[in-house]
Image (tube, rainbow over all chains, first blue to last red; front, side, top):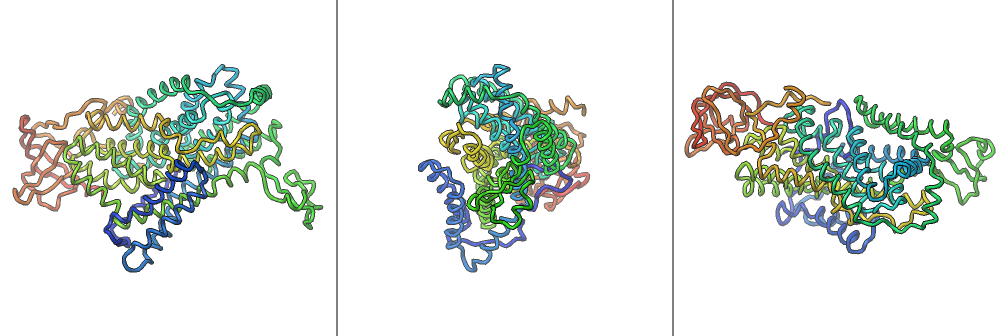
Length: 517
Length: 90
C-alpha cells in the first residue's frame, strides 16, 4: 500500500491488544463482522449489479452499515461509537491518504507537462503496439513501485499517465489497468522501503534485507509468468474504438519534450532509495516537475495552480498581473491547476477508507476476527503443510475484507506468528507468506484500496482529454481477473505451502536481528 | 551468508519431518506442554522434540536446546533446554 521509508516504527499500534475495550454483540462475536459484510454486499450490488462507479455512493453504504451494526451491540453503545473514532484515526489510514494526495499532485503536474504525449511519442517511435503495451506497463510500474516503495502512489501515477497513453494507442483498458495494479503488487511485495515489507519483517522477528532476498525467488517466478500472460492477453484483447481522427491528431501532436519528466520520476526514485521519507521524495519530484514545466515551456505556472478571482473582489485589480491569477466573472470563481485537481480527486475515497478502517476495527474488537482465526487454527492447521496453507489463505481472506492492505497485514500478523511458531516455521518464510498475500489481495477485489485509488484517478481523465469519455473508465468490478501478478503470486505461495517449496524451519538458519531499512 | 546464497536460501522442496543429529544445538519455539504425558515439546514441522527438562511456562518461548537423541524413522527426539532466548512475539 502506501509506504513510508522512515526511521519510525511501522504502525503496529493498529493491533488491538487484549487491553482495549471489547464490544459485545447480540448473536456472539460473529455479528461484529456485520458492518464490513454489509458494506461488501452494498459494494457488489452498487458496482457489480447496478454498474454505478460512484465512490461517494460507497461512503453512504459504509455509513449505513456502521449504523446498522450499532443496533446489534449489547449494553452501552458508547464503546461502539468510540471504536469508529479509534479506527478512523489509525496511522495506517493516514499513511495511505498522504501517499494518495502527494502522488496525485505529482502525477497531475507531469500530466500538465505533456508526459503522456511523450509516452505516446516514445511508444510510437519504439513501435510498442497496443498488444505489447500492457506487458511493458507492468514492467515499468513494477520498477517504479519497487523504487519508491508505494504501490498506491504507483497506481495513481500510472493510471494518470500510462493509462490514457495506452488507451489512445489501442490497448485494452481493463487489461492495461490490471497490468498497472500488477506492477503495484510487485513493488509492494519486494520494495525494502514498502511499509508492508517492514511490517512483515518486524512482526515475524526477521531482518528486512533478509526477507527481501528470500522473497525474490517467489516474486520473480510470478512476475515472469505475469509478463508472459500480459503479452498473450494483449494480443487477444481488443482496444476501444477511438475516433481515428482524434487518435491521429494526438499522436501527431505528441512530442518527445514531455519525456523530460522521466527525470522528475527518477528524482523521486533516487530520493526514496536513499532512504528519505516518501513525502520528501515526492515533494522533490514535484518541485523538479514544476521547474521543468516552466524552464522547457511545457506548461505555464497557471496549469499547476490558478486562482480564478471574481472581478467583484476588492483585490482583483491588485493581483490581476500575477501568473497564478485570472480575473473571471463571479460565477466562474474557483481554484484550478494540477495541485488542486491532483489532490481533490481523492477526497471521497479518503472518507470511504477511513470509514472502512473503522468497520474493520469494530470487527477486531467485537471478536469476529479472532473467531475466524481460532476456527482456522483449531480445525485446519493440523500439520505443517495445512498450517502453511492456512497462513496463505487466511492472509488472503483478511486482505479481501480490509481495504487498506497494511491494516489487514497488521491485524493478521500475530496469527501468522502463532501458527508458524507452532511448527517452528522460519521468520523469513512467515514474513514472505504474510507480505506476498497482503500485497496481492490488496489490488484485486473491487473494494480494495489499490483498485479504488486507480478508479478515482481514472475518473478525472475525461476532464483532462477531450477524446477520453466516461465509457472508457474501467469499472472496479471488471478488473479482478486481470491482475495477473497478484493472482500468480497467490498461486505461487499456495503451491509452495502445499509442496514445501521454500519452506525453512527456525533450525535451518537464524534470521538476523530486526533492523529497519 | 553471501548475497547470492541469501537469494537462493530455501529454494528447495523441504520435508515435513526434518532430521537432527545428537549433540546439535538448535533454536526452537516451544510448541506446547502435554499435561497427561507430562511432556514439554517443540514441533519442527512434524518432527517432535521432547524436552528432558523444563517446565510448562516455557511454552511459546524461543529457546536454545541441545539434541540428546534422535530417531530418524519415528521423527522423534529428545532435547535438553540450555537457555531461554526470548518469549515469542504475540
